[in-house]
Length: 375
Image (cartoon, rainbow, N blue to C red; front, side, top):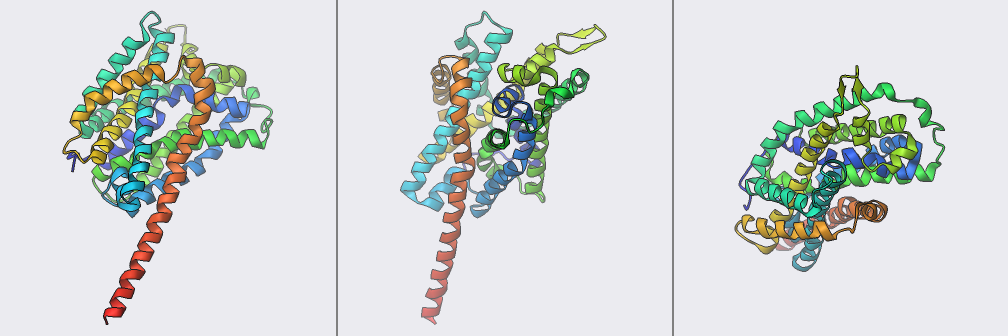
């Protein structure tokens, strides 16, 4: 086995929650509001059951090939050539996700916090940290997540509690005013982003210690993460209104700027930025790890560590060329990304389930017929 490190179910759900929150804590309100406007909070809630179905499908895929990662399962279930083709698809998906997270971190920091710093310098520092983290293995990454998750959760709850008094429920009206089609389109955002990008589970489950209620704990965790994001969407609309939520890429950052407690505790957006960078880092590190581990399994290497530095160099280059600017990224790439996420998290796994089912059924019947003929 390329990865000898083992993580507990608790560490797994910590990584899931950090990945699910990740960059979405800032950009999710703007993306979903661009579809459903003041009904975005309804869309985010409607999408949760369908998102749970996506996670259930992912877990079922793993149960059909227990103990094998996504890449190993593809070769085992689809054969050499088709398995290789689909594996390349997923490896490219993990690589682009890593580059996109890196670009998002760079765009946020250079437009909101350290404006005069060159974008490539931020990318370089971020990639170096990713390389350092992944080189220490999944165990170290999971233990670090246990340390940082309370900080992320504490500040998100702090943001929610102290910004709610500024909310105006009238900004949610008219309820269902955007129409059913717009609400369904917004729900697809929920299915694609908070849930669909958890395909990385298929790379982590083989290294997770088997415990009772593992699947149940995973489903509860993704519900908590999605409800947290839905609450952020609801508060953003109530405080900023649907128009400003849609046109402020970093809505949560704007909310943090508005917190004022007794004219004493103010300007805490820097804390918000720090927490967001932490969660985004873990999301990027997880995808980085999935790519180097999957590529090593694809190439049948003895270790994934020789691929870490070259992958970091590729991510650094891709992060710069993936989009000319943040406006192009938000207005163009985001809309196509939804289809890509749903394809990788739902469409292909459903196809895999069908293949595994028919192969097991056909193989069982063939074995039974062979035993009958021998008798």
